[in-house]
Amino acid sequence: MRVVNFSEARNSLKNVIDQVIDDADYTVIARRDAPNAVLMSLDTFNSLMETVHSTALASPNP
Image (cartoon, rainbow, N blue to C red; front, side, top):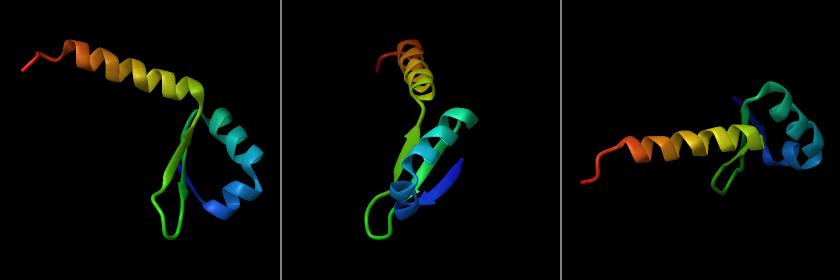
């Protein structure tokens, strides 16, 4: 995981995106007076959603 501030992310968005994809990891975009955000590749997001969906299906219903 990498953390960059909002200004760095804005000024070098292409590089931040390239690094997220190349490293197969995610980056936290930290903002001073607002909630943070996470940037991840589509492959990472799809894998995460598949895991969440599979876990939800495997869990017993209340």
